[in-house]
Amino acid sequence: MHTADYDKALYYTYRSEWDHLLILMVRTKDDLLSKKIEQFLHAYNFEKDYTVVQKRLNALLRYIDHALDVYEQEPTLTMQYDY
Image 1 (tube, rainbow, N blue to C red):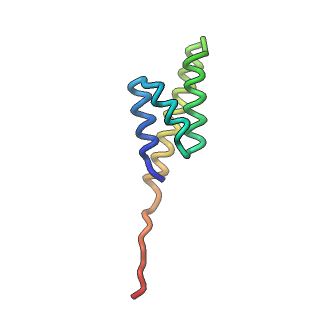
Image 2 (cartoon, one colour):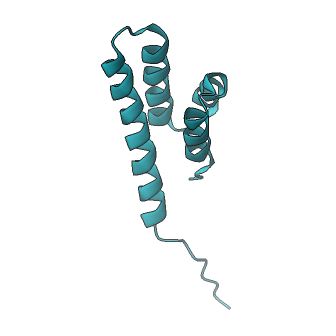
Image 3 (cartoon, rainbow, N blue to C red):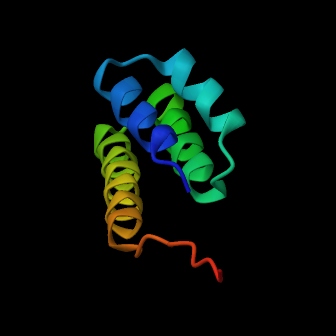
């Protein structure tokens, strides 16, 4: 698993680059990341209650944080060669 998608999602969210976030949503192989981005962008564009937008943004950021933590905790695989 690569962290590039999560880093991009954080960057695009921080910079409010919603077009790039939408493209990331379509291209990422992480279905949960895609769903969290979709829910946030939908709330941002159509929801009148700001608390819902904030809730979706927090859910997206929590998922990214969780995914990065899991990635860091995975043991690195080493190749063993029999000579």
